[in-house]
Amino acid sequence: MSQHLDDERFYVFDWDAVFDVDDYLHFYEDTLRAERTEHQVDVLVSHLGMTPGMRVLDLGCGHGRHALELARRGFDVVGVDRTEGFITLAREEAEAARLPIEYRVADLRDLDDEASFDRVVCLFDVFGLHRDEENHDVLRRISRALRPGGKLCLDVRNRDWMMRGLLPVTILQKGADLMIDRHVFDPVSGRLVDYRVLVRDGRTREARFSVRLYHFSELRALLASVGLVVTEAFGTWDGDPIGLAHNRMVIVAEKDG
Image 1 (cartoon, rainbow, N blue to C red):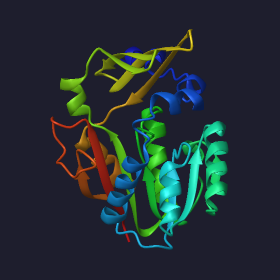
Image 2: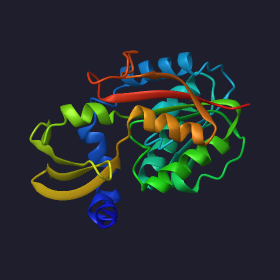
Image 3: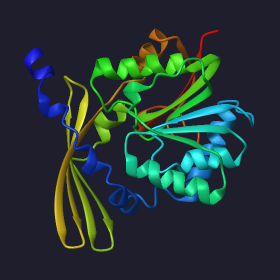
């Protein structure tokens, strides 16, 4: 059993290929549209009890779509992402909008702030990309970064839905370009491994990556272990309940004190 749990196949992550900025923005254009971002920020502001002037940390901020919208609404925003290309683009967009957003090129596992933020958001499967002990440590670091009474919003895939609704292959098409993902779920490690083939501009490339999927009860216990108490949880950004009908978990947790 231990040999299976340590199988490196379940932890391979071709980071530069998966988070190539140009490919990402091309294929996920519909997901990244402004109306969707504005709606998600509406939900964050409402359910996190956010008021202008609060200091907000956006972990895995990408090119800064949530950070930019939060800054427009009067929040003091810090965005962190490991991919330098995303941070470069985020800084350019913030400068063009004349918004004072602080951006950092950094790994979540190196977060070292202490009692510095009123709110933390970690969205779109940013959490769960690492090994279990590292994921747990990321939550510890988030808790430490929050001020007493601060809140976290975590947006991850719903493992229970994935067990029933996961298709073996999904295809995303943009014109003549294709993103083909073959999904393999390993129930022992709890990891979903994606084998990706990108066909774009006549070129074919391959990448592999994985994410740890959690049951709601498992994630609630992990959050509690670092002093974060779940206060709300939804299965969609429209407020539907967590369950087998929805593939997301949008979780709000509050720091003790």
